[in-house]
Image 1 (cartoon, rainbow, N blue to C red):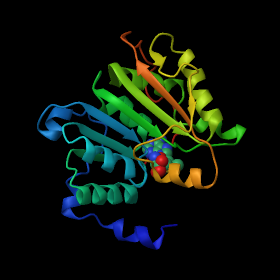
Image 2: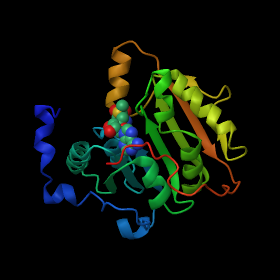
Image 3: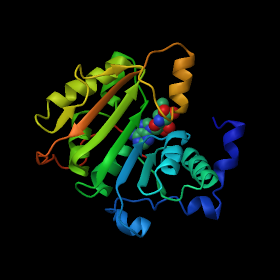
Length: 231
Ligand SMILES: C[S@@+](CC[C@H](N)C(=O)[O-])C[C@H]1O[C@@H](n2cnc3c(N)ncnc32)[C@H](O)[C@@H]1O
């Protein structure tokens, strides 16, 4: 159900649409997208756009792309970016794994953020989680050596599952935290979910991974995750 507050995002203005990228599976050319080269950051499942709009505003010399299922949230985030004056953002509606696999050139990303992905908390639902081994392999292709992935979730076993999936891709990712994860670190731009979960008294588990120099191995042909919802 669409909340009354979100209904206004059913129609996208021309200005909002200018920040929204074309749908499809074509490989992106980030420099052409922004008409100049610059370091590229990706947020996956940006929701209501607090993080990506604030980060883009704070880093005007870098480029930000986001991918999100929900069309209304895409429009709301474009609205937020326009309000902050952040024009170094392009937002895409679609399924994140498909986007990472098909649209991102090799070694194109400097940073990736997956903040409070859908937790699928029941044991029988865990196979639906986005950050599985195949996803981490596709992301490894898109991320440059030395680039970083930040993952956050109040569902700690999801964070542990990510760390376990990383061990099945030997040498591609290095944990930046000695114990693999950290709990409740201070964050500069908390997301909506982060704030809500903290207000509920939840503790948050963070995983920070660095992409190594090792070239990513061959991938299985697409589709690898047929059960994932299409936008
Ligand atoms: C729990 S919300 C968190 C939103 C935001 N990151 C935050 O922390 O406030 C998860 C978001 O990811 C989006 N999402 C979940 N799975 C996705 C996928 N496979 N591809 C694209 N977006 C996805 C959902 O539509 C939703 O907006």
